[in-house]
Each structure stands twice: as C-alpha cells, then as structure tokens.
Image 1 (cartoon, chains in turn yellow, brown):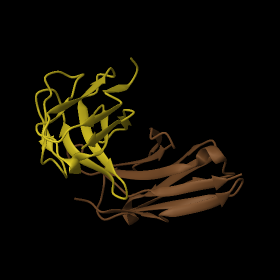
Image 2 (cartoon, one colour):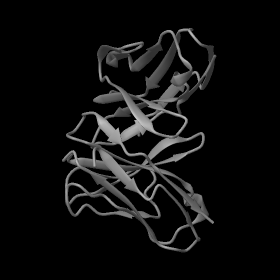
Image 3 (cartoon, chains in turn orange, green):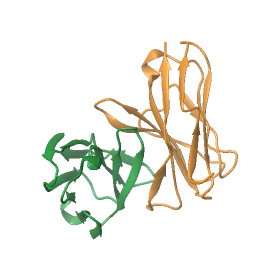
Image 4 (cartoon, chains in turn blue, purple):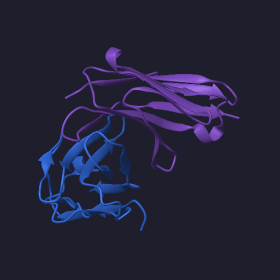
Length: 112
Length: 108
C-alpha cells in the first residue's frame, strides 16, 4: 500500500441499505477527510478528522457518519442510503494543518 | 464557508497552445492547492501554493494571497493535459473548499 486506498471502487446499493466506504492511508497523516463529487458542483466536504479520536462535520454531513479509531483508517457510513447519495466519494489526508492534501482514487456509489 | 470561483468553466485548446486558469476566493486562506482530475477520475496534486510562484515542467502557478487569487499556467499544452482542473483553499480546521473546476479539452 502506498498513499490512500479506498474500497470498494464502485458499488450499486439498494435504497434503505447500510453501507460503509473504507479508507486507509499509510502516510501516518493526522488529518483525514471525506468528500463527495457531483456533476457541476465540484467536491464538497462531508466529514473530517484532525486526529485519531476526533471528527467534525463539513458542508454536507447529513445522512453520513464517520469514526476515527486509529490514525490509518477513516470509514464513512451511510446508515440508510437514499438516491441523492449517488455520487463519487473521495477520501483524503494531510499531515498537519495547512499542508498538502492527498486523495484516494474514489468510490463510485449508485443508490437505486 | 469560503467561496471559490474558477474561470473559465470550459476551455478548448489546440495542442501546443498556452492557457491561464484563474481561481478567486472570498476570504484569506492558509492553504491553496491545484489539482488535475484526469479522464479516469483520479485527482492528481499539481501544486501546493498558499503564496508565491512555483513551476513544474510546463505548468506553473502563482498565488497572490493579499488579492485573493491564484493562476495556473499551462504552456505548450498536450492532449494528456485534458481533464478538469480544480482549485481548493483551506482556511480553518482542515476544511478544504473546492471550486467548480475548469474543464480543459486539448485537441490534437
């Protein structure tokens, strides 16, 4: 593993189902983020974590939850998926405040 | 949050041409990055440039933080430069705000 790995790469999910998107980084970065990318809207921050054990809400947190049990992992959970959560989800990390952020390859999620 | 505006939204170039992409932001920031999203959806880091000027091959970037804008220059464009270019800024608490991007199409 080098950098940030997201899983799955893509997923089709029935509405109402629970889903966890996984994100793992091996750079020992303190900060991690989840974004969603929708056509014409760029990337929007869902949740972030400045360090293990802490999380915070971004621009569009409703319907999503996160946890940060350790430095390397930052899973994103959709408790009950809805079609409006169809999007491409990116996980990112950065070392310290105001330093360069690196992105995973993305997870394409379709909720039907 | 901070408003980030990128221009132009779309750009078509002939291979070999030069271009300038602009990013304006509404408040002072502590971090600014430029990314290239290739046709496969990957986000590639281009520059980490909260202020000043940097160059990397045919690409260079300048950020004038006091005037709240950044420019990305692409010289001698190639078809592989096609994709969407995003500017992202960070002010507080590791929250990056992205612009809507500039979609670049370089034709052979």
